[in-house]
Length: 65
Image (cartoon, rainbow, N blue to C red; front, side, top):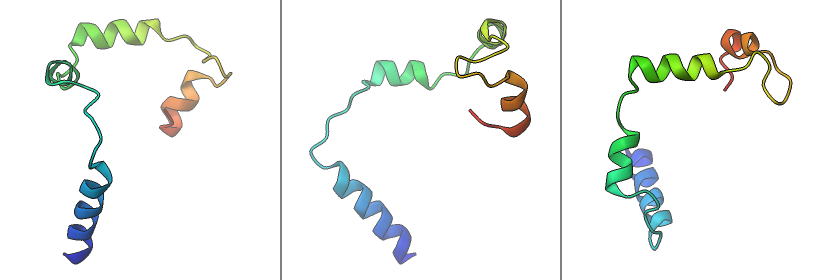
C-alpha cells in the first residue's frame, strides 16, 4: 500500500506545473471505440512490408507494435 501511495504522489509531483496538451474535446474523440469501418479501412491500408522492412506477419505473430 505504501509503495502505491508513493508512486501516486511521485507521479502527481512530477506533473506539477505541466500543461494539458490534449483538451477535453480531443480527449473525448480519442477515447471513442473505433467503428468496424474504421478498423477495416486501417487494416486494408497496411502494406505487407513496413518502412523498416519487417513483414506484417512478424508483428501479428510476436505482438510487436
